[in-house]
Length: 190
Ligand code: GRF
Image 1 (spheres, protein in one colour):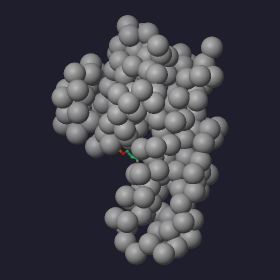
Image 2 (cartoon, rainbow, N blue to C red):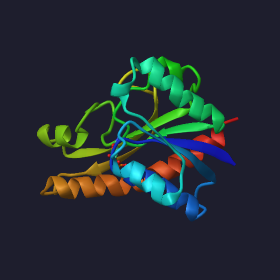
Image 3 (tube, rainbow, N blue to C red):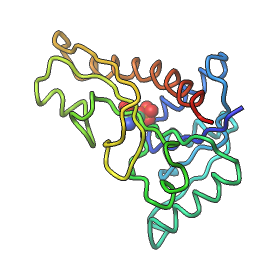
Image 4 (cartoon, rainbow, N blue to C red):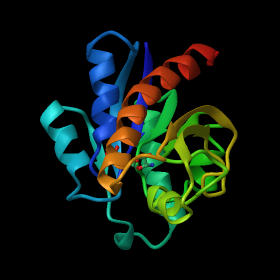
């Protein structure tokens, strides 16, 4: 059984979708740790309710990224984490963690990368008046949403009228695509 760590800063709906896929035996893995830089986030609340261990930190209380990433690394190693799954984690991963988990950190992004990197990808797509956007799962490197693409799914938004409608379709794709992709990535791990 592979151990995964989920990194989240926000609502944690993808975290929950992954948890549900495990409960339904669609994904053979254990969520051994939730890492969050937002102590008051819904993701942290969910981890507590589900009885999942968490490493929660306030970046402001550290002198540097290297220092907090060293603490995260200790928690990851302690639990023998095989794969790091970013699910709305709003920070770039630094070399402290990247160097220890080559091709073992993945992220989900609400656009068809390389279009609309960074924050508010859905807003960027609306602003650009594209007819098609989508969801990407990719490996994480030192850049922002720049790593090798693993899976993508398009979404036609041409006839959608509100941002909420687009968001709800994007999230529905994410909640299905992320567990499926994690499954494949775990199978490919030696
Ligand atoms: C998702 O839209 C994901 O693509 C992006 O951040 C959002 C996280 O949502 N990276 P949630 O916290 O999982 O609900």
